[in-house]
Amino acid sequence: AQKITQTQPGMFVQEKEAVTLDCTYDTSDQSYGLFWYKQPSSGEMIFLIYQGSYDEQNATEGRYSLNFQKARKSANLVISASQLGDSAMYFCAMREPYKLSFGAGTTVTVRA
Amino acid sequence: DTGVSQNPRHKITKRGQNVTFRCDPISEHNRLYWYRQTLGQGPEFLTYFQNEAQLEKSRLLSDRFSAERPKGSFSTLEIQRTEQGDSAMYLCASSPPPRYRANYGYTFGSGTRLTVV
Image (cartoon, rainbow over all chains, first blue to last red):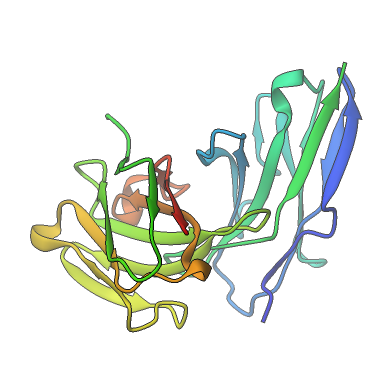
């Protein structure tokens, strides 16, 4: 069963604007973790941000913030002030309980 | 912290040949994971080691696939009698014991891209 759903295959965003990437998840565990990774064309997986299920505050890391809505089981990534270097594939993932399960990803293209 | 190293970066092989990939995790990381990623998709879990013990294998890991982690250090992933459907990026990741980092500290290598012709 699909545990991580990313419904946006691709998105275009204008440089300096914000973009929101959607992620919904399915789990019956009370303790879990949600991650966002960036994968540029070079192939490496770059960790962006983490949200624990018991964290009361939404996670933020520089230009990245995670909009965590536990009741809706969603963990959307917001990238503020987009840069050309943000063009990449973005994956939402959930820890269960030690391995990561990934969504299908969203391709983001930043336009100048 | 020198990162997770994977070799080779690229491998082209003929159908039916055997291939072996190597992953060197971060030295203090006791957990090691293998994933497979096909074009345009997210990584899919293959197998997981804690120290030298292989604790879980995905159903994706057919009998032609075998992974080892002798002495709990580097790991190898071997594919026997390769098929065209095995063409993918094979990613390795490692993580320390959970108590070390709140975000579990998963670190990925750059992957080995396999092409079966």
